[in-house]
Length: 415
Image (cartoon, one colour):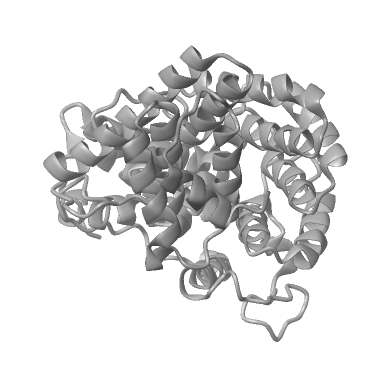
């Protein structure tokens, strides 16, 4: 058996950071299939290493692992598959920490596979540590089927065009067929599958698979959140609002529930219920403040609400904070991590364009919107979402765009 130092040498093992010791303990509890201990160790490793990443990116780490993962993702250092599985491990660890679910026989093995995936990203692809290699215990026969299902889902997420893929999860002839239906319906796997299907707008499969998963795990937080998102995406807004409000009562500080519910109520307001303006707006402001002004999605919606409700000072203040956040991210990537190419994705650029507009930087807003709508890299993106929001802003008399910005809004808006 190799010693720890033979397989991992990074700044993650030092006098005040003992990752190697935890990995050795994880190997021991894995060898005897001590399920609770395996989940606790892997959850702790995820928490400590995500804290490390946030610190390396120049920010004070939070005890909230969700916020730390999302902060790393804000720099677009995480590929979507790694992010999905990191959140899956976070949720599994939280369920054990807060005794939210009974122990199931595969929980420990799943957690080991997920933490191995996370650590391999951290050491080999994150830009945040020196190159190294992590070797965890070989996957046992007991874990083999779990690993195969994990790999199958990962390959589906990474190598298929999710927007065109038409998967029938109940058909054993498809690429993600279910040799072990109960295993795929475990929340760790089911939530990743359902979120991908929702994003692909394959709502028939979402309904079948999510309904089945919830029958087996009716109390799972993430599956219930995804049900709210599914109802929202399929236009069942009143039902989505009722279920998500109930969920928020159970988990009043959950960032994901706040964001989904606020989006539902905003859609109801856009559909003509003017009484909903303050409701969705205050939720976004709560989320923005709760995230310590890190979550730009919550922030830009809070800024929009402030403008539309007449508080232009608050709107401009939030918008300026968002533009500064993007400037800081680009500086960190370029100067600290030596990443010279911009890591902004489509929604980052949309948020920055909108933030520049609300902050009063009209020329910068015009340049960003032109890139957003006209860059060939963004062909096929949902321009109408950003354009409709832009039209709403241009209808506020305190916003003074130039003619070019108005023409862009009209060209791509569905309003």
